[in-house]
Length: 283
Image (cartoon, rainbow, N blue to C red; front, side, top):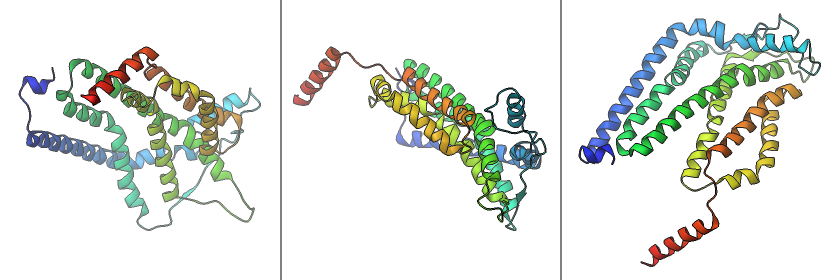
């Protein structure tokens, strides 16, 4: 029995008040994290955000080490590599300082925001549903951070190296603006965090009966091709290492989705469900 039934049914205004406090606590947490990141943002810019602009970034060093042994790895041999970031708008640095602090606050506070959502909806759930929901929330949080990590350590640096060095003409000099850099930085990292929620979304769709294992198995080959096409688009360097490093995790997410979704019902059970539904409609 849900806790709400044990303690008495909550009125609409009680639910509204609980939602109001949930939103207030979430906003306060975001503001506190944003203030913290605002204070440390100059350090974070030098050692985290702009780290992919320098040749000593951890991914570049790792690729250089492997490139000395494996011939098809991309050539990252220049340790003095550097991408210069320029600011062309007077107020950009100030506003980016504020907006980036808030963006980092959203990432850092993500587990707490999930906890607040859980605390709001948990009284309406049965015990079996609570156990399942806890697992879903923890899994979704872990997958989000895995996607953010992949975006930061792999996808954005590889894309930056390709686009910053790409020359349409020898008469054109690339100058990466601060606004452009931050837009791509935040977009790719948050996008990968969202993409890594694919297994969770698939599980949810299976719970409400929209997809089954047969659907994912039928389109498994198509998904493999699509994943590597997407990898080629978001990491346009063209080398096989980069495409594999991005496309393989995307396809593994698809396989994880197959594992999580519900299996197809036997034909007899589906017929029984359809019969029961028909009788219910007739009544």
